[in-house]
Image (cartoon, rainbow, N blue to C red; front, side, top):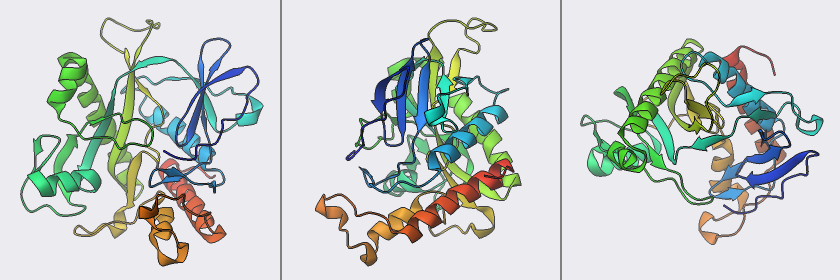
Length: 301
């Protein structure tokens, strides 16, 4: 991943790590501060042009979803009382021992899942019916884990058996079951609001110390990072869904499409950084994120 800018200094917080969108800090009391920036990435580059309010939209959407899922799985949110400089786009969270697996649930066939299916008839070792096409709805949602790649590399789809080999049968089964339960809940809620949740990527951790209310082996797997935002999930307008073609998405597809168009003047194969985004592309992308937030949560932004 190229071009990640230096993380801002935050009083009382020590910078630990920066990813494509988020900056992570440790607070003086030992908790973590996770800050969502307005950065946007495409084709393994962090673009020079931010999308205004994107960090706040992602943070508010994650918090809304954490609330909808609270009875299914505990989450890492400790507080939303954050430093003024990052108010509205940051959370104070619990430090976890993170599982080294991207937990992906798919209800529809697209992206890397479609590529794997076309090559083998399977996705992550799960055999699927013949005759499926781009954006086909699957007979039932499937768990399709991936390795966590280094920054700038691509996650690699792996089998459930591979996850068992890495973290053990009990933990692997817990992650699979929780991932599918979260997807099922979220898919139902999104569908009621006219949106299809095609797939989503979740991250889980294990508590480093027992919390009040934890029982042995119960409640110690915790949902972390962001959850069910347009950056980690494919959302499609339900009224427009049509198998056999790529769908319009509530995400940064507008940015990708412009970069690949002759208008941008950028060649993906060149290895050079993409050009700044035009105002019109920025505005349309921001509007798409806002639309997804408002449709899903019923809140105004």
